[in-house]
Image 1: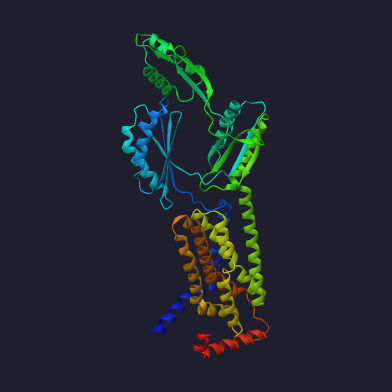
Image 2: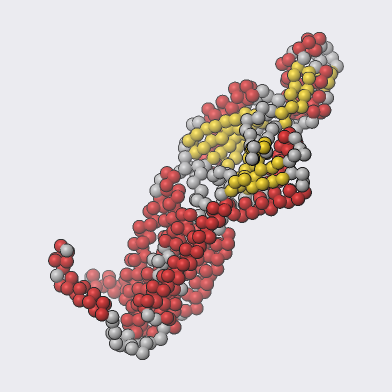
Length: 519
């Protein structure tokens, strides 16, 4: 029974390898398709410093222009916070209120699916929507795709513009345009001032016309809601206020309307001088390098159109990311070349070495397609996996080639030697590859933050090893059968002295297995 099972296993491996040996065209086409998919994926893979390990984030925005911060907090923000705090997987809830806008940000645990979290938040907000003020707009719930910190930070300075003018210019002409660029998630202004229109009601004027402050405030809110959030000073001052006794007056007849700035909450200085800075965050799935390049070109375009404003790059993480990427590629090529040299030193056959070396691109390049489909990026972790696996990707091919050469030394043709050797060593090659996959793949399923980092590490190595196995079972025997040539010393065993000594030691250890085990 045992012999029958073993022969059945050999038969399966024989059919797989012999199929490629006798019909090389399908194997060649599949290899070329896999290489093409890998090359295309390589050009599309984003380049980042590290894998995306940011927690899922969902934001809720409710606008009620004209409402005071206290009213928004009591009537909107607290109700939303209470509703979303019960959603499964919530890690942190943070809210901010400004200019008639209530914004609540919910951070979830790393293992929470962002789409499911977004749907759960929408359901929770919909349940309390009837409790919100009638004048408030419908809540807007969306996922936040910002990743990490700013990838680039620029400073804008101009001796010809005031702080208010420079801040308004950066908000309108720079930040507004940057947000429209593909791959940009958000842009943060640092420093500068924010324009604010102050309305100070005159109690004497209100009393003269029989109007209370609450009634005037309600009319101002209604007028703002109808006109929109952005109003000029003149438009706001001309807002008609209806009087209880009939008729109406302009707002500036009942209040002092002034154009001022909000109290600054951040500041930015460069070489001791005040500036207005802005930082760019990339979206998930975007490339640090690509986004930074687009931002640079846009800033240069704005600078050319507005020579009175000078822009300066004051911080960037992209140069470090690009340097790591370039260093990893150099290490990959160096490691691949060294692996080929070592294979040649042991096989001592140029044709056999080239056939074994083909396993490297057939293992690495198609794995890039798998990385693209899984949403990976070219970062420190995934590039480490690619370079680390370079040495083990030729193992299967070496085992196949060495066994084929051994059969050719028996006097067999290259075709027959490839068929017999591939059949003989097939199960061992499969066992080698699956063992490596069994070691590295489980690393990808570690929980917490560490698991998010090692997911790309383990699955990248597993994908490369599986493509290495496919190359060894299909391409390597096929190439050996058609390109290997019998050596002049076929049939002879001219082994170096150290190999003969090693053989004697192995023979002794097998004959004295218990002594060897103790040693």
